[in-house]
Length: 234
Image (tube, rainbow, N blue to C red; front, side, top):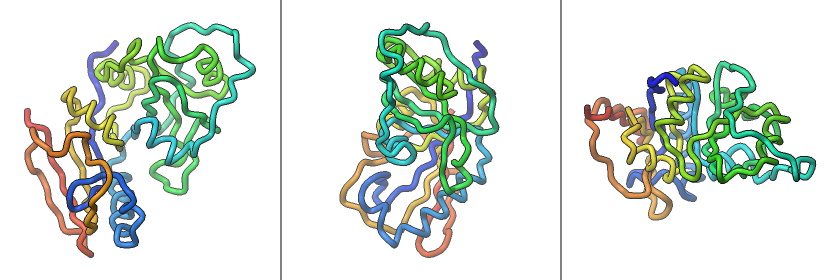
């Protein structure tokens, strides 16, 4: 496996306090910041975006469950499965194989996400044979990132080597963001700060605060929206 990996940009929408999730995201005052967030997402021209299982379910799967009844009792090897190459990818960190995708690519009104081919990131000892066979039938690519826990460096090397992903947008939630942060695998922070005060919801990482980065850019985008960009200290 090529030891090179994608350049990882954690791109998130945050409140003034640095929260990245919560009911405040639905506030009318957040609408302009949301538009800027999607615009900047597209401006990166990334090869893929990545989210954890909960975010993928809430945003794209909408609670659908996989019907595995046709595959019960069958077996499947534990080899990575590449259905094919695509222009853009949606990388789902779904350790146990729970997401019930309706297709092998994203359906979304926003052009930054629509038509992205799905890649499931799984743990070999946590996912069922039936789910793997179901993914293959759906034409959904998958890779193994470990046996029971994910080795994110291995995951990134596979994304680079198998799918030619050179730039990856990491877009939450806080569990997967913090896992990348603790592994030292976030190269850049791209934060759109909404003009909203939030007293609830998760922060960018499970542990509040940002360290180990240098300020690179700060821009006023109008209507109280601020764009913040930080690069990893090397």
